[in-house]
Length: 128
Image (tube, rainbow, N blue to C red; front, side, top):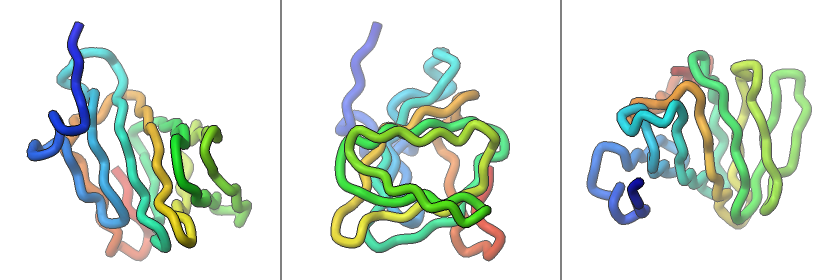
């Protein structure tokens, strides 16, 4: 058993500034649990085109608001208590709220190494 806090992750390479927010990678591949848990912040008024080609992801909103949009143009509002699931390695737009950050608990399977970073400058989207 172990306990790890956000503060424990800050100052390590598992605290990632990913371009439109931050990710505290609280549980990673090295922990041997078979999945990753992150505390993810999506900054207000940001838009990111993202795809996880090698990971499935579920995100549970614990605060704020935002949106997710699939490649068919379907837009889903996300708020506290909502979960969205990327069960097909879905390419998607992730947006922070108009006035508030979107705060998520993100679960990845298989687990992340913990140091992955997005390249949001790629017009085709960031993928890893």
